[in-house]
Image (cartoon, rainbow, N blue to C red; front, side, top):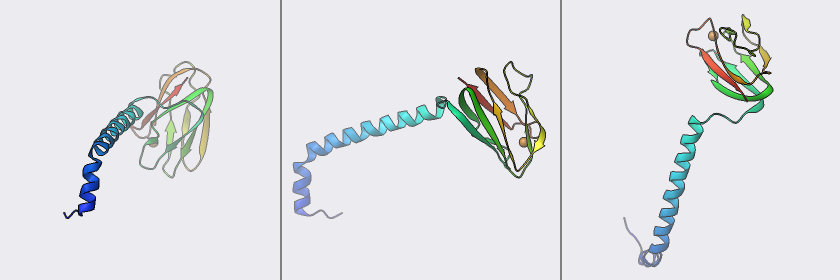
Length: 133
Ligand SMILES: [Cu+2]
């Protein structure tokens, strides 16, 4: 790679600055990586109303949502029918969506704090969790 004399002079003159910038850049990257790692493992910030897509690819997306006590989760059903069951009816869980449902949305209200796993009885392994805080 060809470098002009002026660039080399400039580069040499500013090596210390460049080194400092590199350190800052590396530190920023490290911080960003840590932040990204934290985002993927820490629970989501609770919201008043969340929407979960029940997709034709047999997934609840996002699989984990966090809402405030008294908040709602709207299940948006796509073209493939699903149901939503809170197995063993944990205390405070809303009523199950027992009918196979497609192409419409249903909203459930969560009035009790806790962690509420749910699943689709039609598609084994299709599951999600609502955390109420
Ligand atoms: Cu399903």
